[in-house]
Length: 280
Figure (cartoon, rainbow, N blue to C red):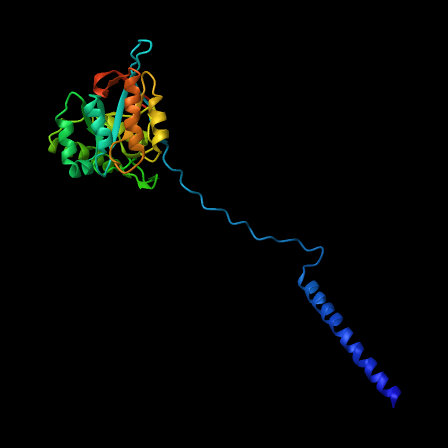
C-alpha cells in the first residue's frame, strides 16, 4: 500500500513539472507555424509618407537708414514710434515734448480712436511730430495667409490695400495730413505686398535698431539698446504700452542720446535708404 501511494505521489509531481514545459512547447510550435518559411520572400508594409506642406511666403523685415551727419562726434538719429493699440505712454511723450525732440509716430486707426488727447498733443507740436500710417487694424501686410507672432496676416492683396488705405482714411478724418510712409504690424512683409504698397504711393519704414523688442524688453535692456544708436540709425520703439517696463527705458535712452549731443530728425527731414525695394 505504501508503495502504491509513493507511485501516485511521484506521478502527480511529474504532472506539475511537465505542464509548464508542455505549454511553452505548444506556444513555440504555434508561433513557428505562424512564421513564413525560411525561403519565402519577406513582405513589408509600405511606409506612409508625411503630407507635403505648402511652403509659406518669404517674409522680409526691411532695414532703413538715414543719411549720416558726416560730422565726427555728431550723430544723427531718427526716432520712430509705433502706436499700435492701447493707450499713449506719457512717460515717453512728455520727454519728447519737454525736451523738444523730433520723432516720427506711426499710428493705427484703432489707436487714434481711443487716444484723442494724445493726438491733440501731436497736432499742437507740428515742429516735433511727423504722423505716419501704421494701418487700420494692426494686421501684418502680407498678402497670403500666415500667422506672425500669433497675428493673422491680411491674407490677400485686397486685404493689404484695405489695411493701408483704411489707416490713411482714419488719419485724414482725424485732422492729420495725408501720410507718405507706411509701417505694417510686426514690420514684416512679403515682397509682393511691398510692391502693392509702393504702388499706392508709400515708402515703407523699416529700421536699423530694435529699441524695445515690441515693448516686451525690460527697462535697462531697452535703454542700453537705444542709447547705443549710431550715426544714421533709425530706431523703432513703441509709445502705446504705458504699463510695460520698456517705456521707462525708452524715456531714459532719449535723454542719454540728447546728453551725447545726438541730432534727432524725422523721416520727412532727411534722405534715407531702405532695402527690399521699400524706398527706391
